[in-house]
Image (cartoon, rainbow, N blue to C red; front, side, top):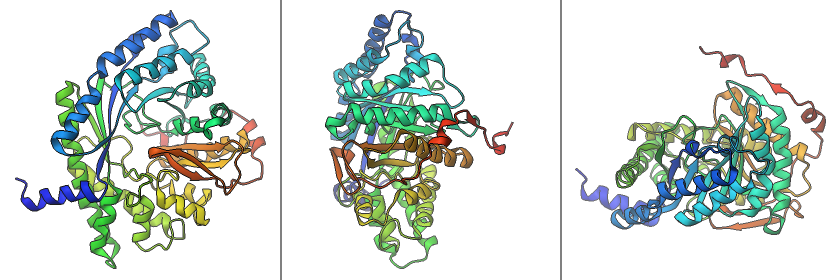
Length: 452
């Protein structure tokens, strides 16, 4: 039974500490939409999404009003489109992206994810067609998000796909140059992608998922930051315990919303992703949590250790609150979406190499990082390869979402607005990796992949 103190505490978390449900995401299988006729297939895609998700946005609003819990985004994820479009006799996959965009607009959601391909071991003709269409698809749509999985612990790293994605990221930036390369903010390159991730831009509805499902992503950096005020100067084991208890409370709220949305939409409840996802708002920053624990500026020595403790404590608290924790679950460190990260990058304390080290111990990877517009495709591919290697060897999900800013140089800023925020252009190493990327082939899976 809730007592008055707990109720008031939850109200304070929502009202003053930026606690919210970051997203309700409906995953929808589109395998039934496969058709040799691409026009018919696109029609089926549009119709099924609209039929399944027609009440998603209104249901989210109703839950917000009745429970007083902010739900920032309502989203849709679909089966990786390369699997669906591959059945159609066409070389042009952009119409499938346009169908997704139309459906998302009709349903009123914020984003739709799943213009995706899974190529960790090799690429089919459909995968190649989809990947090559990504720049045009993201330039001609507003709500579509794309992802490509280029590696896994079981398969190794597909370096041919890595090289191709380096060029695709570059081309996507050029295709959306009039918007500071905004298309790249909707494109993620994964290693060990998970099938039930509700967070964009990497969400897709995995082939192992049900016909449709509800996944919820919660967020609460501000709540964790506030909780840490009560343990100033205390030992780190006390800090970890405080974070665990806070993550438990955050996840319980997510579980409540997920179950209610599942019931009202008559859709199975999938998972709660308890990731600490920051926003550009002051007081909603993962970087400020790290600084509260004793770092003068995020990125200085000790940052990786503190982030490891934060990520672990969040996971431990969350799994005690729900039997359905999934997705990515941990602490995100996107530069443009976190005002503390932005400040640290502008101060020069936070650099690309330090961010790479931090990705060894947190959720996902190099996220929303602006780099100079003249960064070569080979350098982008090499950065992707580095991050994929971290994921492959450590058996964790890693990803790269780089923003090559057309016409911008180190020290400039790109502005994307909303949750995407702004990002200072950060330097990359000038030395070339082109000969490495040109080798192609596949980096074999590590020995510990043989677990059977």
